[in-house]
Amino acid sequence: MIAEIIAVGSEMLTPYRQDTNSLYLTERLNESGIGVAFKTIVGDNLDHLTSAARTAIQRADIAVFMGGLGPTQDDLTREAVAAALGIELKRDHNLVAEMYKRFAERRIQMPENNSQQADILQGAVVLPNAKGTAPGQWLETVVDGKARIIALLPGPPHELQAMWESECAPRLREKVPPAAIASRILKVAMMGESAVDQRAAPIYKKHPNVETTVLAGQGQVELHLRATAPTRDEAQAAVDQLAGELEDEFDDAVFSAQGESLEEIVSYYLQMRNVKLAVAESCTGGMIAERITTVPGSSRSFLGGAVVYSNQLKTLFADIPPLMIEAHGAVSKEVAVALAENIRELCNADIGVGVTGIAGPGGGTEEKPVGLVYVAVTNGHKQDVVQRRFFGDRERVRRWTSQLALDMVRRMLM
Image (cartoon, one colour):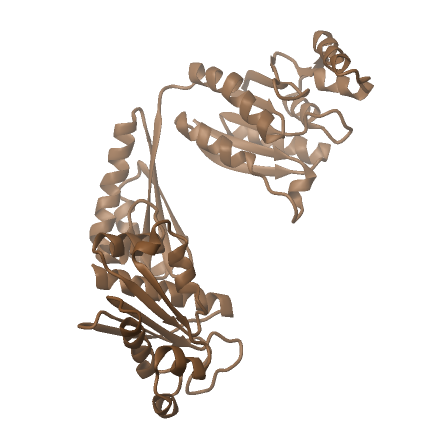
């Protein structure tokens, strides 16, 4: 079975509000073995909402509408769903009486427009709202010979979540065959999306029972794997089988098999091997240190370091000889290696990282263009240094450089 979630409200089509309810509902539906195939956001326009409702009811087994059940003129979900189904709305006067009672208990006169919240789809079951005034609705119907479930839920998250748990989830368990969804996320470092898919596609195409999605990030590509089966063990076995084959193909380029970030993996390896790390950063401006220190417990392995943006501070804080900078330039293999080795010794660390480059948008030359970076990692016995040129804006160059540095640390630790 597949579901569609329709978020109703013009405010979510502005830069100032986001639909967060759908994340909660997706998780709840997935727990029941139901995949969410579509998510739609529709403004408070009757024609647009009716069209979206008609489409959702045609293509999804379960359509969940969120919002638009209030008392104002722009709360149009009930009318739109009724129009899409070609059925009538009927006012439930018992619900109206309950609303009047609730307002009276608060010693507030109920505005007459609140009564429209009691307009119920023909054949629908009213879902009590323990947290607010707008009741939900649950309708089981047949459209073009296909069984459909339609749920109308209030928009406020605390109302929606309470109604889903108490009213919708039990009904869904009675209607949906037992199923389970299992998922894995593999993350591949420092490869492009097309390069990853070229190698991964021949493998995941042999597993049609596992849905595979390839997502590109900055300095990494994620392979999202998801399978649905009658039991959790069967679904997990299908996902794990494909994940294992992909890990064999990409070998140590896969830095995470359970969705962890690169900084989490690096911190894990540092702590597991009882290794101390220090960094000397120029063009990344402290981004490597910032990423590592977002991981809880990183203080057990990350000592710190220095942001040596200027040539003077490269000399003062990382002991780089001025003659080296004069001879090779601040952006050079030699300076990157010296930064890594010197910061390791100055901080009494086991591993040192040195980074220098030109993040842009200015500062580049024909010989040393914008995006050129050098990253060095050393443990006192082994030394790795990489020259790369990253394209894009300043933030992208810095992010890719920090990703490269962390991945080099990971590989040295491995």
